Image (cartoon, rainbow over all chains, first blue to last red; front, top):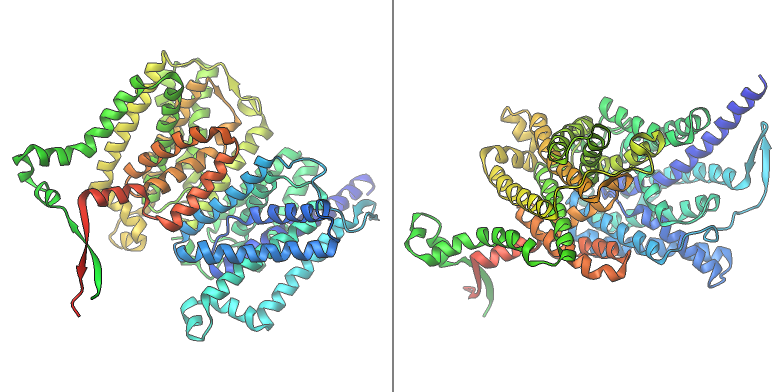
Length: 296
Length: 334
């Protein structure tokens, strides 16, 4: 008991929050991939784009917060749809062309921002409520708790959406078998476009919640993409359950190495986890559905 | 009256496709020009260019080699988004051998090429079974994480890197070494990809399961292809270490992953020549655009998207088609 005990509790709490952050980052990427099979490598760019857009609307145009948030999310959703309509649709089904095209888009967006040089502490988003609480002897600010709550709500909302609404069921239909879904009158191009849009929208929401903890920087885009990829690979691409479990694994592993070994080692733990999972089960922990497509 | 475009082989192509090519100089020239011209150009360029553009030629050749290395594994069905892994591992191998053991560049470059190739193959062995974009995702992550490992463990100079490598004897050695290696790699590996061995590699890309059905161990062939690509990439890294006389974390930078892919996509994937051609277009172009600073990478990104969508075959295939075939409008019978 005593200090060690509180340290353990504190670390666990922050690990839980880290898990929520990772899940929030990965869920949008995973949604897009799970439905349309489009690996959206511009995902990190969408995240950063929404953050800068929101920042600009708040600080340059002085929009009220809710309006700015709504506009940022809608803009991202539209952008996702446009990119699908004008770029991805033309290379649909050629997975590698999709990857190169989205990667190119992401690269162009992120490098454009680093060209502008908008980096620094002033480039951040406001926290929702400037307050902190003491839980089991550990300081936790409201923002982190909000992330925890929002992740849980988002995952449940997505589950409800994909199981109980017409579009959600169409999403799952396309994910299971595109051709069969077509015979049921589901327009696969329309649904795939929605999936990319939804992914982009979720990236905007993730930025809205996570950015206030730090500041906006183009490098964040690469970080988010890497973390989303890591979580999705470990969990098994396109599996929501996998994302949650993998977020727990990576989230706890990162926090505990950070506290007990050293902060430099967190990334190495993620890499070790990825390689280990790939060696033992190449399709990820929960990736069953498309096993033959992803490995041989 | 409806019309359609038809595409027909030029007479000269048909005439020069077998022994009859020897009948006239014109046919022989038609066959030889596409092969001799690049060789002559590559040998003459180092003499003709001024010192600044000689440096540009160095990076053209390095990017071209990396693009060839990318194309070889891409033709085997493994699209890598992390050529920087090969480059960086080669650079560190050579740097460490030169810095700690004092090996001369003439020894450390070849040893680092082979060692780098081996190390990269071993690193990627666990993901050999992954296909398509799953492989791409892992290759994108690995170099970025290796940077963090170097940063965290502070091995090989950590964030500072290692400096004070032995340079190559003279800039002429530098220039001709890389140009000759480029030409050998281009023509040698083109030949390899057209041989039976290359056919197996391409078969893995087209349909890996039917290659397995033919009783061929595709993992062994994939590993070999990775090793070949790894050696080329590691050579570039080792070479640049001695040109810059420095090795550090920037060798894993995204540039070394993006530029080769951009070159291969712009030039035309699947021929190696296209990849080289793309490098000869993109790198000088990026020098011209140097005034834009960081915007250059934005242009690369835009190029990637435009070419993937509008001209997925690449410039090289386009030129090749124009060289061998002509087009005309033909009437369609009602």
